[in-house]
Image 1 (cartoon, rainbow, N blue to C red):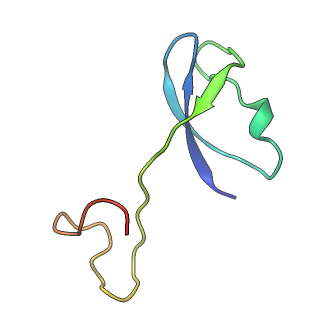
Image 2 (spheres, rainbow, N blue to C red):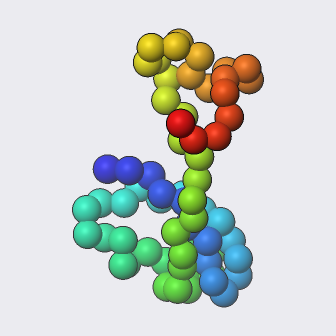
Length: 64
């Protein structure tokens, strides 16, 4: 179950929420309760892997 970042189209509040499969259409703003939200593109961080750089300040930026 991924955590997605959303923004309310009414109050512009950004928030993160854990989304169950198929529940993407039922998201409402925790600030004002408005149901029109848009999912934002957010960065990811993977700890471990082959380079062991994870989320360190010196880790490469951008998509790979």
